[in-house]
Length: 112
Length: 115
Image 1: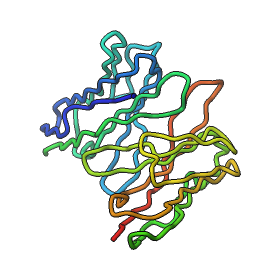
Image 2 (image 1 turned 30 degrees about the vertical axis):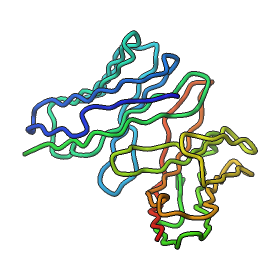
Image 3 (image 1 turned 30 degrees about the horizontal axis):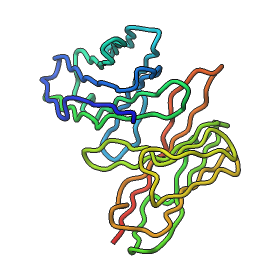
Image 4 (image 1 turned 120 degrees about the vertical axis):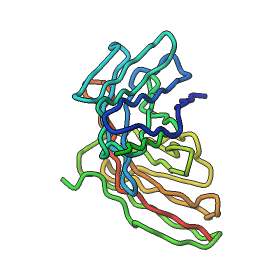
């Protein structure tokens, strides 16, 4: 069945450094890849998404890259700030469905 | 708009009891789904619906039932609660735009403890 692997499970960076989170999906027909941020005790909220016809997308300090051949997509956060500390989830949605398969999450800690 | 709402916020059940988790959205979204979130396991899809009268199973459907009689509501029923169903449950909704997938909006969650 469909599967999304996410690494690392935890990530600590110094404030101002960059953070990279990587995901691999199994269904080559997946065509939509959102990233969610979840703060402690809160609901997941979309921070950026990318579609299969695009290789890269940026929104201020956040960027996502997609390699369809390798079935990899990655989240890049530059100039990290303490408020970036949260759990980040990637997801993939197979073509022809409205199912979203989530990765297991990455706990990002930004150290001041 | 209230967005996606869920009730109750917190519930304690005894093994074998049944209950319904409520989810409603006021954004006229066609797609609604239920997830459970357990430590280290991310968000796992339980059931989803692509419109009123249409539901389908996700990754972990056993022990749960759903129905979708209206666009706004998508309740999740636990038939006979088990300790393994202790989790945080999130409802989410979205709507395709011109056939394109769009972001899901999540409700605030229901924390369920089964003793």
